[in-house]
Image (cartoon, rainbow, N blue to C red):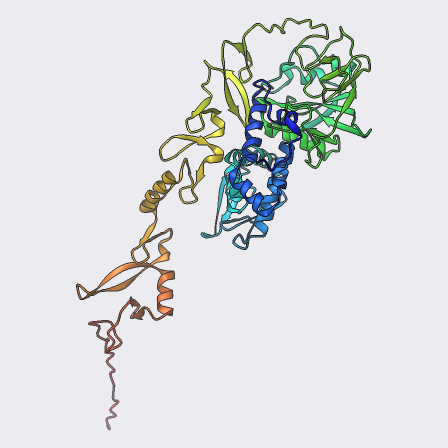
Length: 540
């Protein structure tokens, strides 16, 4: 029996893309949502609580918001998680970690890592941000119920990008924001820093945004003036209730970096240019996947824009407002009942004409290298799925356990067995400072590291990092009828002395004494000899 809300079979097809293969982000979104809804542990929990709100998820934005709120609430209610971890203005709870005055920002401004204090050792370390968030989630009772796909997405994609964007705010300003009419600039490869993965680059289609719709070019540039991330800002959008919006279309960036996309969005929000934006990451291509300035989902909103587009006028590929009503001069982000054209096409115009770069018979398109090829393979790049030339996968690593190809920048090599694992799945050791693919490899490496660098307490059967943590005790061996000197931690010895389970004589400790003498066996007190001197006075 299903406990989540679906409005019939059409709603199921809409959410999970059953018609056709779909593109990479659709496939990944479906895996994440289905993984969440089908989690047996989560379903059992909801049944016991008679509360199915965590399963009533409308889209990725809604999923993210509900999970994060549930994790924070679960941590607050758990007395076993007493320590405060503050990240990006939100408070999480932990039994193992806490943050100090830096609130997670590393001293060296490493944008991929979180600075934290290991409570047990009372020392500062840093851990990859996605791995750290995964650890926090799994410490909570509710976090243990979520599916692996949801954990990987939320920690490895969403939080990693959010953290990187956040840490940029602690560095000198190196980006400049632009909101203007220079559409030519944002669609010109010579003006952009690297590859943006856009099918409209250098196609001379930017006149569409000047002539057909009300829009602005929104982009950030580096110190050299190159565009790092860009998007089209529709300035006059109307929803079904007549409310006006300024909505930012899907963002594109150098190398497909979601961090740069978030930087663009954050700057636009901070400066008050937008009321909502297309979600970053999974679902970004979907026409309804807008979120408000506060991150809440707008997927239930039906938006429209004015669009003055004749049949021979230049057309630019549309991600969202792609259902066009010719006679009404309106474009919609949903399949309006009377739409006449679909604008999600690389055609030059509504007639279907092609320009010199529009030949669709060149084979498969490699999104990563930006060329046509014979065959492509589905790969993962910074949390999104892309098609890559099957004969040119040098930058991608095959992860056998997942049966997937992932970009090398998203993978970590295990320092013990040398196998690759996703960054979000890697296990970090506070002892060695390295990353490992599994607990077994990490334990083996830690044991070896301790043998070489730490100090062993024979009495406790434990390793201690500092030599000052170790002292010695004389332990009685009944078989040999003699004491053996063994190493012991200073903390343990202090406890034994306090509880009268050990005794100290002449700065040496013993765990057993002779009850007849209250001295260690065979022990002789050192006698102190006192000399007396007499003064003799002689009469002269």
